[in-house]
Amino acid sequence: MLTGKTAIVTGSTSGIGLGIARALAAQRANILLNGFGDPNEIKKLQASLASQYGVKVAYSGADMSKPDDIAGMVAQATSELGGVDILVNNAGIQFTAPVHEFPPERWDAIIAINLSAAFHATQAAIPHMRKKKWGRIINIASAHGLVGSKLKAAYVSAKHGLVGFTKVAGLELAGSGITANAICPGWVLTPMVQKQIDDIARDRKIKTKEAEISLLHEKQPSEQFVTPEQIGKLVLFLCSSGADQMTGTALPIDGGWVAE
Ligand code: NAD
Image 1 (cartoon, rainbow, N blue to C red):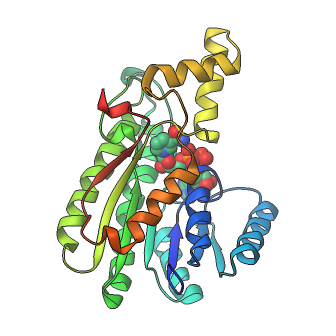
Image 2: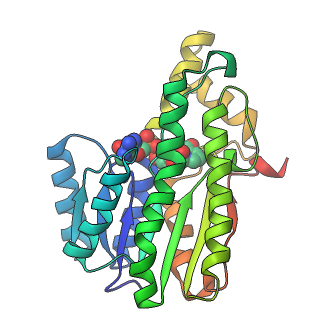
């Protein structure tokens, strides 16, 4: 379905981003991976995706908190892979604390990586998409882009901001062949969420499995995790012609979280 197209997936060395990169590669898109991790592991990942799916796989270690790095990443996709057709703004971090104790530097980092990076990458990618009169901008927001939770002031603010940014990009690009949409996952069992489960287990002195059940029970009516593969499939739908007229949306995939 995506033969000859190039996708940048930020934060794709782990979790949801990696699931999305796999789904896109399986449809024959060339991929620019991004994110942190052990250089040897990343090289292996690059090689295994390339050989498994017969696509080109590049890697950029760009730090999403740095606008110059982001511009360099987009330039690299065009020079090494021939363009940017699909941009998935996925890299994100989390930190929890009450507002009155929230460290200002953590606030700044979350806003930079979870929100501003999407603006910088989108700004750099749009001219390449306009040339081809086709493009897909997909922002990985969160259920926390639609509703709040205690202790997550920066994250909830960034994700609500990302949903707002998606609406404006969708409006400005409407009719151009380029769409912008946000995906709003509920709980997905990735390293980011594992840390929160481990914190609950430690604080409440309960087993990890009990902490996992409690985390799901509190927010996600299905009491089942969403998977990176399911999010990858939603990304593929947004890249299909069936989604040509979908733009500016925020799509929950959350086991019922925001229906309550
Ligand atoms: P993760 O921690 O498994 O992966 C995060 C990825 O981002 C990693 O590849 C990491 O290296 C990269 N990253 C972090 N800081 C970076 C930086 N400064 N520059 C470049 N890359 C950086 O997390 P995940 O759960 O897969 O989260 C991916 C996205 O999905 C995030 O935006 C997150 O907010 C969102 N999300 C996650 C969940 C969930 O339950 N896991 C739910 C809703 C939304």
